[in-house]
Amino acid sequence: MKYISVKVRVSYEKPQELQTVLELLRPVIRSYKPEKGHGGAYRHAYVEIGIPQESDEKP
Image (cartoon, rainbow, N blue to C red; front, side, top):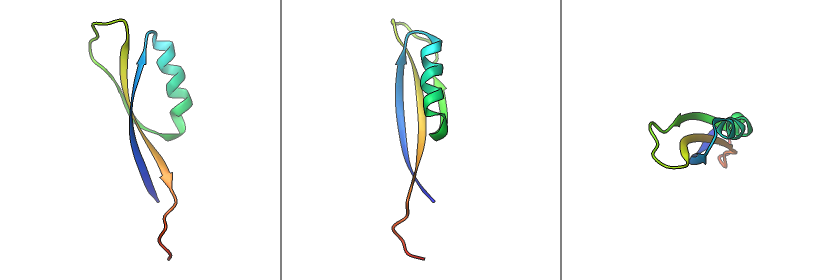
């Protein structure tokens, strides 16, 4: 099965907000990494998701 790979940058203020987003994306998450250090009002995390794609090839 082929996958479409997408990288998403999530901005959040509170860790609970990130957990909510991760819970919603859980079925398609391949990996995620919170950004180290932050100097502004928002924190960031990088989420890589994989969406299954039907193959057009005939067996």
